[in-house]
Image (cartoon, rainbow, N blue to C red; front, side, top):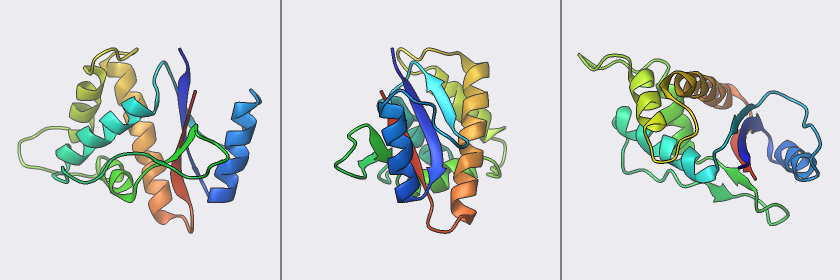
Length: 145
C-alpha cells in the first residue's frame, strides 16, 4: 500500500515536490505523510470536517492541478477552511470537534490506523490548513501513490 503526502506550497513548488516524489526521492520541506491511504481517504476527511463545522455540501473533491502529474492534487478552498476551523471551532455541547472528526475518519472502512493516530494526523493537517490561509499564493496539496 502506498501513502499520501499533504503539504503547503505554491503551484511551482508543488510540481517540484511531485516530481521528486515520483522519482522516489526525498522531498524537501514540511509535510504530513500518511501511510496506507490515498487521495480518496483525504476527501473523506474533508467531508467529515465540513459536516463538523456546519459547512456540509461544499465540494471537497480534490482536483488535478497539472497534467504533468496525475498523482498531485489540489485541496479545494472549502476543505482548507473546514480543516482550519477544526482547531478553533466551538459549538455548544458538542465536545472537541477535531477529535470527533478524527475518530469518525479512523472509523471509515479500511483505514490503516486507529483513533489516536488519526487525531494526530487531523491535528497536523488542520495546522497546515491554517498555514495556507495565512500564506500568500500557497495552497494545500496532496500527492499519493
